[in-house]
Structure formats: structure tokens, C-alpha cells
Image (tube, rainbow, N blue to C red; front, side, top):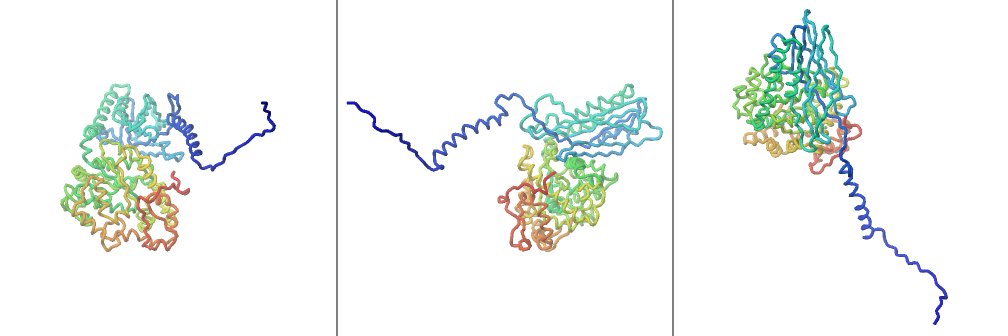
Length: 598
């Protein structure tokens, strides 16, 4: 039977559903897995077929303030010499001549790394003396951190001679690294962190044509071996040094650091010094804090190692212990072997110590230091943590850092109270070239200093918590002054545990008495006072307008450190409102536009 089509039409069926379905989710997951993993692999491997690659990093090069100079005064072999090494100078006899030395490092592009060293050395001469040759060595530290944590010591060597005497010698040069083998990509690379070999080899190169000069070079080389033998001993005896614990209380002015320093000073196992770098700043007040940073670091290192000859450059020859800044607050300097007035286990009083121990010889301080297992130094003259990396990697030190901070509003109130005592320090922080701050600019300068202090707290916190190299782990502890005065025994016990110290019953009683007195205290004096009430004094004594200003300057630091901002005068004076936030509740926030770090 035949069949034929009478009529037809196509049928279109459409199915619709919501965008948010399992099918859509599945499609997105498939797309993500298709494209993202290959991109991540390519990025992390720096390219699938990449065999070699290069990157650029500006190293952190800092002058070590170590100099060795030899000047030929005629063509017959007579010379003058000087160095920053005491043993070398002792060997020179009549040939030793002290020059006038100035050194200034410049950060020309303000990126936090030094770009240029301006070094000037002026040598006084007798009327009959002339200069025919000059040679000198300067030492530097060299650090890389981006792809490889690499630290070494290096040097610059310059030499010039002429048959015609001269009066001035100028050198312009660049320090360059010639790398011959790959650096380690993980861990700390210190293969070349040895200055002894470089200096000794360099000394061998200091030669003249005449036989007498050749003999002189041999003497100088021997002198350098003697000088640096102390460093070799330090390395070979590193286990002995590591039995000691070195604690640096890192803080800023008027932050309760004197009180925390006393907590350690009164411990019978601790040799304590308060701000020994004060002598560096007083002696070289024309320079900025950045310029003085390396000199301060070198002084701290020598003090940790109980080498008190480092103070020769900053104090007069026949000095006493009482010539040291704030010496009387150190219990160790008021007890044997420095002074016999207190027993070693006694709690000292600074006024009594000042009265009975003020004639102790300075060399006894070094003897005392060597008898203690713990050396603790409180210092307020460091503004970043990276400058301390050479100390943290030094095999002769077992360094731990306690970073003490305080509410900037309370710090500002205390700074205003003791402004005149801080004028010299303020001028150095603000780099005023040794000029005193004018009276009408006093308040403005105080705020400028606080801005730098708050920046430094952020830099130190960031370095220690977010960018910490392996050698810093377990060796950094941040402490808030407010936490200490609220719960003294628990906070101090934690600090003692960090420093490998035990809290004795006598110290527990002293801590309670010193924090629960009735007095208000005074600047730079540790007396019995109500510490918790004093820590809140700014809320009732400082005008709200100044509070707003300091909050604006230090907003980023206060956020990082866990301090709540006040929005009104009522909040400021409402003492029941707690402005110290629990550490677990605050979050990091970037700096405001006004406090971008340099």
C-alpha cells in the first residue's frame, strides 16, 4: 500500500534551568582544573624548559668601621701606621700616628640600603715628614636575602706610591662581587663569612721594593695573625661561648625598658648593662642614627663578649666604672668582683650603689662580666632588625632578642615629661648634623621622632614574623609593657623562660613590691609605684587633640601591636574601656599614607 506525506513541521524543544546548579559547578571545576594547575606549575618551575635564569638584587653592604692604614714617609722605609685594632697599634711603637677619621654612608635612593660610603682620613704630620705612599684596608659586611640568605665579610684595598711627595690622595671606586660558584638556595650561606684570610692575604700584598720594607711587611703580617687569632679562638671555642646566653632588650625611649631591664638586672645570674651605646651617640652626635648603627652594633657585640676595650674609643683612659652611663642600675656592678658592698644574691639599690661603689676600677667590669652565664643589654638605638643579623649569625654569640613595645600615646606623654633629657637623641634621630633642636620646634620634633619609632616597630615586627630567616626562629620575643604591668609574674616568668632563667621567691616579692607601690615614679628612676595606674595616666592628662595626632602618626603600629584607637574624648577618659586588645584578636594592617616606610 503506498504511503505519502501530506504535511510535516519540525519540533523544537528547549529545557531551561537555574544558573546555580551542579552542572554549572562541575563545568567551572573542569575549566579551573584545565587551566590553573598548568599555569601554577609553569610559574613555580620558572618555565618548563628553563635550564638557567638570572635575577637582580641589590646587596646590603655596610661599612664595618674597621680600618688599617700604612703611610710611607720617605723612600728609605720609614712609615706611619694606624688601625682600629688595638693589638696592631700596640706593635707600632713610635710609628703609630692617630688620624682624624670621618665616615658617612649614604642611601641615595632612599630604599633602605646604603649606596655610597664617604670616607675621609686626615693624618697629622711633623714639619719634616712627607707622604710618598699610602695603603689602607676597609672592611664591609655583604648580605643577600631574596633568593639566597648569604652573609659574608669583604674588604676594599687601596694602594698608591710615588717618587714625589703629595698632600692628598683621592680614590673613587666600586665594590663588585665576582661569583664563581652557585649560592645555596635554602638555609644560611656563611661559607665566605671569614675576614681573617682576606685581611692576612691583603697584608702580605702590602710590599715595597726595598729590603727594609719587606721586613716591615713580615712584621705587619705577623701582627695581623696575632690580632685575628682572637677571632679564631672565638670560633674554636664557640661551644664555650654558646654556654652563655646573650639577651638584647630592644625597645625605644620611654617604653618601660628601664623597668624590664631591672627585672633582669636583679637576677643573680645576670650581668646587665643599660644602654652602653649612649657613649657612641654622645661621642659622634654630629652623625645620624643610620650612620652610627654599625658602630653601635660593634660595641654591643664586644660587650656581649665581655671585651670592654671597645669603650676606649668613647671614654677617657683612666676611667672608673662610675664613668659608664647608668652604671648604678646594674646589680652586677655593685657586687663582687666589681664592688664588695652587695652580695651577689642581694637586691641592689642604685642610690646606695652610687654612694659605695663609685670608685671601682673599670677593668673590674670585664672581670665581672666573664663570671656570669647571662649577659643582658638594654638598648634603644636600633631601628631595624636586619642590622642585628650579623650578631644573630655570629657563632661566638647565643643571642636572643626581647622586643619591648608600649602604647605610643603613653610613650608620647612620657616623652613630653622628659623632653630636655632626650634632646640630643632627638637631634640624632632627626639627623640635624649635631645642631640642637630649637625650642619652638620642640613639640613638632617629638612627633617626628615618634613617627620614626612607630615605623621601626612595624619594620622589626614584619622582619621577625613575616620575613624571618631560619636563624631568627625561636630567638625573638615581643612583649607589651601593658601586659607586663597587668600580670607581672606571668609575663616576667615567660621572659625568664625565654632567657633560660628561673624566677626566685626573692625576685617574686621584689616584683610585687615594685609594681604595687603608691608613688608615681620619675623619669629614668625605678621606684615602687602603681605601674598599672601609671600606664593609663595619658588617658586623663593628655589633651584629646594631641591623642588624635599621635594616633594619626602611629595608626599602623598601633594596629600591629594591638592598641585600640579612641574616637572621642569620652572614650579616652572612660577608663573602664580597655584599649589594650588581646593579641589573638587584632589583625595586621598596612601603614597609612603618611607613614610609608623609607
